[in-house]
Length: 117
Image (cartoon, rainbow, N blue to C red; front, side, top):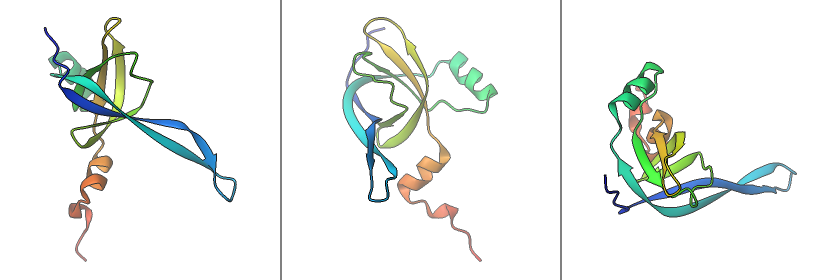
């Protein structure tokens, strides 16, 4: 299968901590945009995740030398959590990602969470 590296993903990581005026550790967030390839979620992967109550939203392939162990990625405007990393070879690293409901609602400012009294 020929991979087309025509998509972009933002890798979100922690680049250290700074202290505020109270001496509390505040994480510094770093974002890097890298090229990726979007893959279809295989049936085996889909059903194995489903047995554990997880839904895999995206399968992305990135270069291992660009991936630094980030747990959060932003792909097509959606915040995704990295569930599993599989290094296929020296040039390809496969990320299995899921979208949490709380992240989805917070991003779009969903009014569906509001209840009428």
